[in-house]
Amino acid sequence: MLYDVAVVGSGFSAIAVTINLLRLLPASASIAVVGDDPGFGRGTAYRTEFYVHRLNVPAGRMSLFPEKPDDFVEWLGEHMRQVSADGFASRGDYGLYLRDRLASLLRDHERRPKVDFVKAKATDCVHCSEAGLVFHLDNGAELRARSVVLCLGIGNADLPLAAGKIDAGVEGSIVRNPWRLRWLSKVDPSDTVCILGSGLTMIDQVLALRVHGHRGRFRVLSRRGLLPHPHPPADRRAPAVEPELGSSREISALLAGFRKQVRNGTDWRGLMDGLRPVTQKLWQELTKEQRSRFLRHGLAWWNVHRHRIAPEIASRFEALRRDGIVTVHAGFLEMIQEGPRGAVVAYRERQSHRPRSFHTDWIVNCTGMERAGVAHSPLLCEMQRQGLISPDELGLGLSVDKDSRVLDLKKQPQPGLYAVGALTAGQFWEITAVPDIRVQAQDVASAVAATLRA
Figure 1 (cartoon, rainbow, N blue to C red):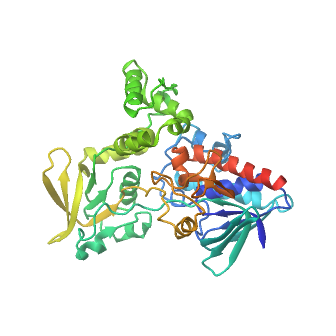
Figure 2 (cartoon, rainbow, N blue to C red; figure 1 turned 90 degrees about the vertical axis):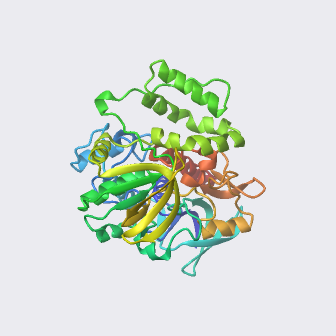
Figure 3 (cartoon, one colour; figure 1 turned 30 degrees about the horizontal axis):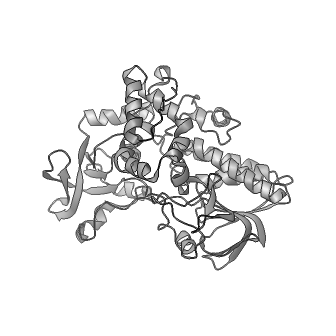
């Protein structure tokens, strides 16, 4: 069968595109959704059922639909969830909201397009032309579509250690992907847990373990020891402030301008929120060298200031630090060895460069998500080999134009081939959060609908 459009992926980007296609395409159209995740649309982030796993964005900004900003808040009210527009809902509830909005569209059999959910992975693209694209699937089938939207997510980053730096005897103590939550039940209540990485995932795992009955100590190790900042309570939240951008796009000049605004009384949180509407435009004005300099020197500080946590979650975590349950170390991981009392984590202290080590029962990899490069996906590797796609020059996913059309090795847009979400970070940078992806998903679905009408 030749579909009008195929959505390749199973996470939030895929469900956002699918929902917009269902709303925009005529009943005569056909959609294939290709992915092997049974929790379609919820992905890693919104599948969790722990109430301590909260959204990092207030509920009032988490609607699926840009033109209906109160949609998620209204859903929360309908389902007796006591969360205001300024509050931070659980991520599990957001996953249920996504499921409900998709289900309500699928129930409208008379007016919606035909949809087939294909439980498989696309392994390679064997044809790409103006007539459409042909994919091979890992179940042996072939899929043909006039337009294709790539919504492939990103995986957990590898441990930051070279081969040979991990003793074989400690492999059973290492949790390489913390979102496979079965490992939580294996941890004894008194075990010491070392978490590599000090960002949002670390906080999620610490609180999940506490809910699970763990009462032992945590040692958190990251290169800089930076922790995410909290959102202030709603009654102390500063309004967004427009950044004062000069003519220079040098990173140092931009930072100097932002610091001057803060010294003159601007709340830094309001300034960061004011950057949101112009972040993508600002990123696109930077040269390759300026972007590279930001990734090397500014990314860690950007993350802890830009991606903040709910105030109640910050309070829980800070209490654990005050009580000595959580200790944060800044340093560079050098080796994980087998010791007489479990594993030994050896690192080099950031400030003094002195060698340090500590014993632990578990090592949990919370170093973040890998960059959305081509290498993580066999499909993308094969498409690159054929010249159908080109990687972003800084390894931030695929090369796409400003309309999210995928570019081939000659930097020409491929007919009918789009990408949405983290794969497009090289073009849009700020494209991992719901408020940004929902706009991109709607734009791409509109472009597909326009092509079909033509």
